[in-house]
Image 1 (cartoon, rainbow, N blue to C red):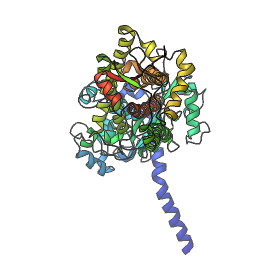
Image 2: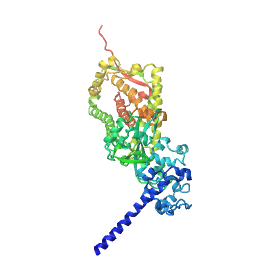
Image 3: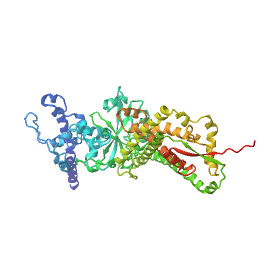
Image 4: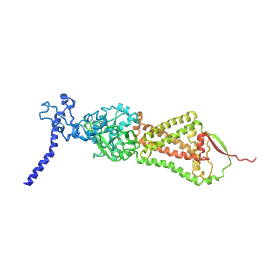
Length: 567
């Protein structure tokens, strides 16, 4: 008998546990039998209609309609009684209390932002969907105007950040990616489920990237999508989403500081998702392999956040380039130090000093402005690239403003340089382009001088003149710097300024990350050249003679005296 009673109690307990779910399911279907048909709109208005597919995705489907509308009778709606509804506080007391303390509470109730028949967890929403809710009250033009007073590149930031990223107390973040599609006019937009469903040929929308259908996107799958996305008129766009949602809507002082995001570092940016639209106008997020956003070429070419999503491999290559610009001059200088006495006791040929006006005033003014701007670009660029370890200018924002100002100055100075040598002096070809003699003999002769003969105290085989200022090696170096690296760093820099007319070109050329990588490596080459250039200026008759020439314009040259001939 004891076993029979135990069995009865177990059966009763199981029925009690199972009853709410089965009852809720039955009641849900009963309610949606009327409220899930559009005919009810004509009877009582749009507020009575509940989309069955949307409700099937909501968290509230588990508790059932009657849990919130417990006053509904069996005679509804003939009884004429307006159903009561539960308050959010009954289940979400902690959240309601948190929200009540926020500055947002006096302007909106829970239902103003959350449709209780379509409310979902943060994991099943995208940044675009969240911002669409905020934009019901906070119109985008007004938001842009208010944020522009302090936020650089306002439109770019508002497109890359959900409002809750900055206006709640969430601390941990993830990258939320979603697919954009190009229309016939060349503009990108957010496609709906049907549009992407057609692009897959009738398969699941997620199969566009998740090829094996395991609800996990590997880096190889992400790369495969990005290799073909351009030709298919698609791209991935990224936003920064909080990983845990809070309702403490507020204006936080630390969000005014650029370092909150840009100095967060690559460790914070490891978690990533792709949001796919569903049939019910919602989204489902599928996790991506850790670290995918840091891939240099194919991971996320159209998502890059300066400083925080830098690529480790590119940083190593850049460091090696700069190291070459430092180590090689140091090695040459060390040998120079060891052979100093040999050079001092050399027996130079009899010579007389000739003073030559080598650098006109316009060239000297251009040189020092250009040089100062280049050095500023290099120094500020280091802080922008590595803001978590380098702080040279007080704040990240100050470094960005100074970097952009220096970049614009360099651009203007390059235009001035071209106009001067092409239009005014008309000597750009003679001064910067190697001639036949340079290529045939000058390169080898000058290379031997720097590598061997300089340490032996031999005279420099090249003598500068106003018409021929640079030796063969200098001509080639300046030709590459002024006609390749400088235009490249200027063009990529302007593309990264997010000037709206140039955005389409930016994506056409390979995306933000590729352009930034090219900008970074080119800048590293320029930085290495700065060290080389400064050291080479010390190889004149005295360590500061070349610098003095660029300051005064005059240079002392040694001319060998002619030997007397016998009559």
